[in-house]
Length: 175
Ligand SMILES: [Zn+2]
Picture 1 (cartoon, rainbow, N blue to C red):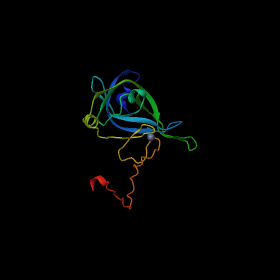
Picture 2: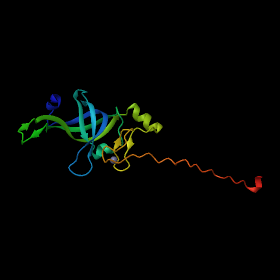
Picture 3: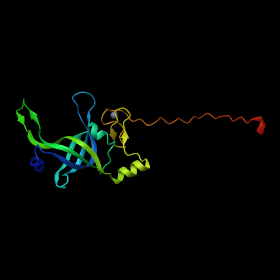
Picture 4: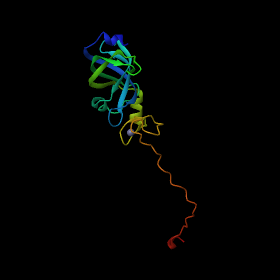
């Protein structure tokens, strides 16, 4: 359990975390939701670590930052809220739910520290993600299929070398 967050229950204040990766989470309807993982989450300005990682939905505010790169530091305002996690199976009378704490409804989201990778990839135009042309999800570069919408990244078909010989006709003027 995230004890450090529990101590701050109900308080809305500023935090920051280090972006590590994007993920997807099944949605009730439609394509899975995009999530993102922040690690080493700290309170601002005390710098006290409140948890080692948290997953967030990629809300419009997060989206507006553009793609995040590993090690970017993102700050935001949020409130500590309890939530239930764990497994329930009523038929087998299994209830392994427990309460944990998370930071909910992040607002005033901003990148406060750009990672070296962010600068290098962006400035040099180095491709960092295989961004899906259909749903916009930032897949790993070696992805063959979009994790979110199953779009298949097909390689552009190479022109098949033809075995026929092209006859070169020289123009009379250069003969
Ligand atoms: Zn996609």
